[in-house]
Length: 458
Image (cartoon, rainbow, N blue to C red; front, side, top):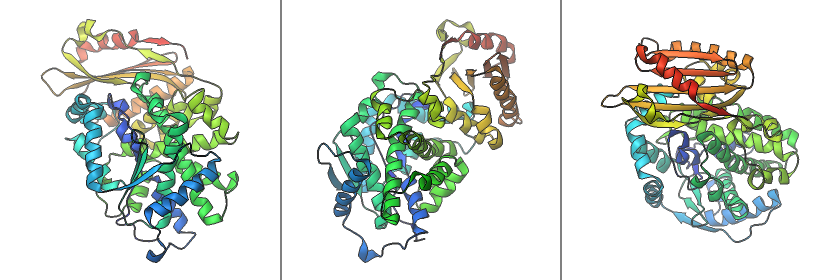
């Protein structure tokens, strides 16, 4: 395998406006899977020499036609491809963050670490400056991106060989093709009022399909034609099942010496890279019925949860999750000293991340299976750093609710080892109610608020 020390990464920086932690959309536009695919292909074929490298624009034009051949879907209009400096991308990134939601970004800078710790997603070093961390990661890793506002693909300088660059171009050019037919900005628009899990599921579709296409493109380079599904299936399945630790090792191996990789918390890596790979497996499963089945994800019935991404048969069966709505917090006396800083839906993918983050990898998949819906709310005590978590979850059966509750109680012994945080976990049939934080004397009042959360049918 060649030395990829200076190899650029790929980023699909479509314009996703963040609203709260469950909706950290810029994070979900970070793509490094192309280089992982390139690594495996390098084991099968010799890497091109420097003299064999094509001019980036010439290579991109060739890859664009090959993408059309793979998808049997022509571009409606030509896609402009421009070179851009790293500095130019930095300015673009700054403008996108400033335009998206400056108030929310300021909130994440201030409270992000508190929120992800209370949720159990993260146990690492303190994250003091979320925005700066992500800017460093993005500017040091990006190799190309598609901007649906300008309808252009931007190519940044880099030392990657032709195979790696081709993978990146195939991914980004396919985003342009998706946008021409399915309006990517509209698919994830804030006006849709998607919760965090729904948003993550739609990003899994967009990025998963592009990942599947660039995987097919790469295999065609080796095999000389589109491989049969039986040959693709094992690789798709293996990559979709990678845990955060394996993802970090994978990305680190393809980015030796690159800045930013070690700064990415594992759960974000699962969202940013793992979600692409899980999305690719989802699209691969549906594509067995032909590309019209995949197009239904945009035109007819978008995925309603990451549960459907993980279990395609639930999308086919139109198995929607339950919706949970909180009571009016400002009318609850037990919360008069607390300020709401985040509330959203976690979903099955992030529940797996929580169990993984707390060291219960063996329980993660089973404990999260059977998810039917959830809603969390994180508060900060006014004038103090103390936080509080209210959480209601719903499960497909009482047995699955019991399995989750038992696993979560084990998780709490690790999450709060050596701490004195007040916690309570209650199960009533298919529902599990949770409070973490606050004073023990207020637990009854707080759990009552969680029980009052309204659940509407799946």
